[in-house]
Image (cartoon, rainbow, N blue to C red; front, top):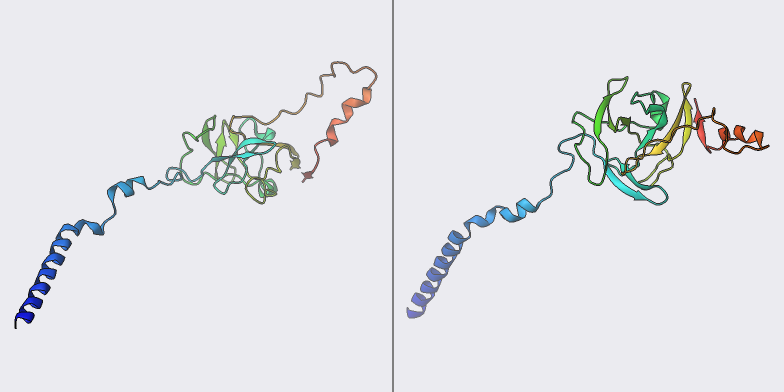
Length: 203
């Protein structure tokens, strides 16, 4: 009988310990407040078009879209008017602004972001008034095949430049009315500029 009583006492003591542990540990079912506060928030919460940066050898630090693809601007749209439409927009997809507003700032990037309405009424993100595009030939992040690319669509000549974080704008076409500083007898040199652009498209 004494052995049975001792066993019952041990069982009762164990039950009391379990009850005490349960009472003290009642708050363990929820997340640790300190851990919850440390979780990062999504940078895309305030805008449908996220802009980041990426360093590319030979080009510099460029703006990129959410997939890491290089963003471009074109000399044909320096006045802010959208001219890359129809087949042009198939090769140079516009950076859609979605339904959100333009980001107020992007870390490491100079310039002002805004949203422009395209002819088809879709919304496109701009930086310093220049509409932003990606390039269909950039197959993976880190590619910038469109930097310096030239093409023609519907009678408009486009010169494309990777949008850099320091705000470099598209290069202006040369002023063909201004003669070289020291032309001498090389009169034919002024006609050689048209074919130096490398690959391009004409539509």
